[in-house]
Length: 498
Image (cartoon, rainbow, N blue to C red):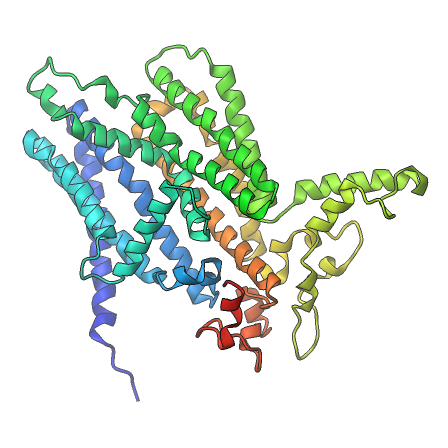
């Protein structure tokens, strides 16, 4: 019997298509009209609307990632605390919320351009207030809309990271890391609030002697504080995690975020000097700080966040070969007194229960042949993420992520070419490029966390690759005592804190 299609199944997709076409039409109109406006009007539109574009795009990409994980049957909810999982929205609805917020922003931007072209400046300057109040009401207030608890959960998590004095949950860490990629949007939002608080900035079109206060400068103290705030939050979170877990690596992670603070501050002043055609006396220091932070951050992404310890492994194997060549009596790695290299090699080895990720019918190990090979050429064995049971995408995609992450980490070098940074449109595109880099980082970071949870609690492989190969998940096997899709049998995972 043919199933009847419900009204919601046809209305919701149609409504999303209409919103998408509306967004594109408003964006095209805004880009065409804004070029014809006076410079102060162009600046007002960019200052007030530029801060909302990267966060909305980030929200849409997060919805796309959740939607992809749900389509593949991956239980990404395992990354979050048990009390937080009930507030997680489906990916389709997250994208719908992002589309609604984008439609509001695009529509008001087009209306602001239209009013400015009509020289209705008093009405024009009221629209940014409507924009921010409307976005906040739709995104956070518990209106009779779907998922009011989820929106309040996001607001509560945001409040937790602004007061980082309690235990850091996975949701706290993830949101704070995402905000680090939106640090420019935070500074732009602070500047927009400054413009709104100083009164009618377009008054100079009527009264030529009027000038906006200097506090609205990109290098003003409120803007610099907003720019650095996400990094300061993550810096404090790393110390809290270190105090809770005792992991020394968190101190190095804190050092990574601390190294980003000079980059942000020096970049703000360099941008101000460069756009004003003034020499920047600390240019050498700025270049050195940017290069160091970019390399340090890329190393941490690959080695620690993505669990691909290539650099550490090459260094460890070189130390081992050198010690082995010296002979047993001259510091061999074999023996009761283990060296630092031996400890690092043990730390980079696959988890002890990785060998138990086997097909119950054939008892064939899921590890790649090189993962079980002890020869010095078994590189995938030290790359847990690239083992077959861990892959959530083709292996070539991870190579692309590694290369693109490195390139996007060094996008600051565009400032060395002419006066490109004076182009506000280019700055917005670069902010969106950082949003895309963070999207790729989040994708792999979630996969790493899922595989980590699976290895600790012997849940079994979690990737779509293993599913397509016909390898049963632990929760799909009879008498396993675990049911991740429909809850937890006998409270197995909840007793473990999952």
